[in-house]
Length: 235
Image (cartoon, rainbow, N blue to C red; front, side):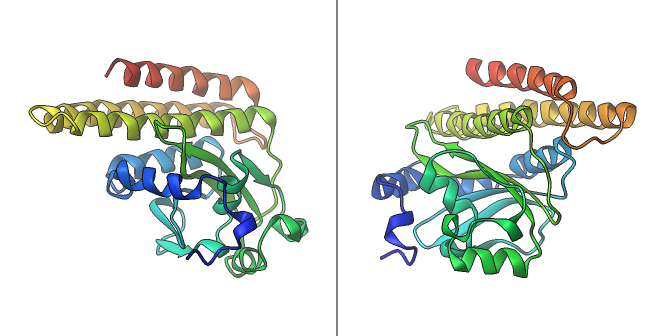
C-alpha cells in the first residue's frame, strides 16, 4: 500500500503504475540522452537544477539529474513532483517558503527546506497512453518569477521527453531491426540536442541572462523543439 495520503493520489493510480512498467520507463530514462536533455532544460531557464522524476508507488526516482548529484530517489510523500501527478498539470511554486502548506505534504515542505529549495516548476510527462509517469522539473535555491511563455516552453520540453520514450519503445518492439534503428536515431537526437544547447548558449552570450527569459529568445528555442518533434514523428 502506498505511503502517500490517499487524497493526493490520482484517480487512475493503479493503471498509471501499470503503464510505467509496461513502457520500461526507468531503464529508458537511464540512457545518457536524457541527462543531456535535463542539462539543456536547466540552461534554457538559466537555472542550476533540472530533473526527470519517475513517480512510483512509494518512491520517486530521478534517473536524469542535472545539478543535484546523489539525489537518485526519495520517498514519494517528500517529493514536490507528486503534486503535478495528483493535479495532472504543470505546477509552479515561486517561493516554497511562502507556499500554502495545504498544497504540499508536511514531509515535502521539510524536504524542500532541508535541501534549501525555493523555486520549483514541474511539467507532467505523458506516456503514449496519456497516463502520467512523472515530471520534467526545474529548481532554484532562490525565489524566481516564471512567465507564461516560460511555462509553455517547459511544457513543450516535457512533451518532447514523452515522444523520446514512445519512439524508443516502438523501435525496441521491432525484434529484428529495432535496436539498431534506435541506436541510429539516438545518435541523431543527441546531435540535435547538442545543436540546441549551442544555440541557447549563443543566445545568452549575445543577449545576456534575463529572468524571466524574454519571449523572443524562447521563440527561437520553440522553433528548434518543433523541428525535433517533427523528426520524432517521422521515426
